[in-house]
Amino acid sequence: MNAVIDLGNGDSLQLEPARRALSLYPGAGGAQIEVALRHSKAQDLAPGIAYRVSARMHVEDGQRRQRMLCALDAAHLVTPLMRAGDVRLSGFATDEQLRVVEQLRAGGDLWVNLKLSVLSLEWAADSAAPTLADQFADLDQPVYRSDQERRRTTKAEQLLSTLPPPGTKVMFERPMQQMRTADLRFDINAGEWAAQMVAVEAGAFVELLVPLARGADYTDAVAALREARELLRRGNIEPAIVSARKAVEQVRDAYGTQRLFAAAKMKTPRLRTLDERWAFMVEDLFSTMSGAGHKDEVTKEFEYTREDAEMLIVATAGMLKRLSAGSRAL
Image (cartoon, rainbow, N blue to C red; front, side):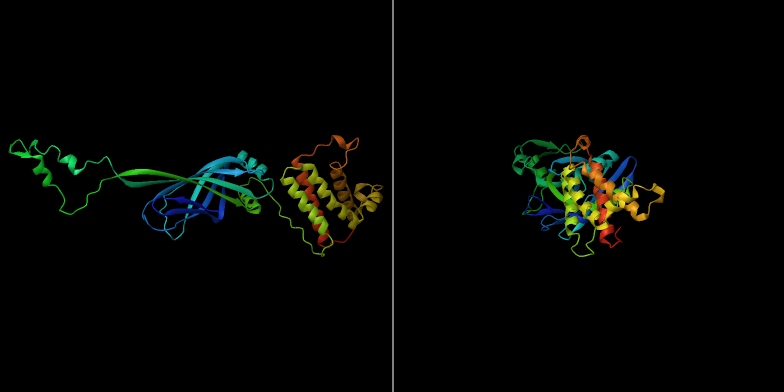
């Protein structure tokens, strides 16, 4: 994950993402995006050249199709050395753009592609500069130094008086703007991106790890939950719900929710015990998810959205965590 830019003189400029490459800061109607890069050179063959670094930031969806997000610019020029230094590029993304990015990453890592541009001002030999031969071409033409003297002299005499000492090498150069480009592709961890979104008040997230604290008892359930998350990331909504439903089946068996649910239906809601109320939640969750796997006269018209699937999968994770943590079975 680095970009190597040939500088055309046997040297190269190298750019790579910093350890914490992305930062978001609150803005009016969006967020300022800051990307931190590390820069260095392979050798110091042409030291002292300053570069202006900019980029167009693209993000990728699950099929690696790129979408333009914003333009990024560095506030200062950089002069790279063999010892690595930092450069920070900043731009702005609106709230709507951030929402679209959330849809593209689909709960997974965010892949970024920076279309880098490196601009420098360098000196090059000027082939159009006059040579000594050009200047001596009309040496016999008279030149008058002043109206007072009116002393006739030749261009040869005048030119010889201004020439450098013998043996001096004369080179004519002119400034030339150089633009070089490269692509830099890297990923932003899902948790890191979510934390940045919270920082700019563009959303909130709950990090939930489902441990296998009771050994391998619930390995299949956790595997089904992982599969559900991956299916949803790929856009397979109903298969994701069906996979998560397999995990809920183990919760039902462990807690005996069917028995408690049947008994609790005869009571008014305020008279139900805590165990019975948990049983209602599990059974309602299982019933809601069943419509994705079984199409009867009622459920054949069910259409689940991505947000529906996310809620059901997160609820399943919460049930599994409670079970795996050794909570008392219902």
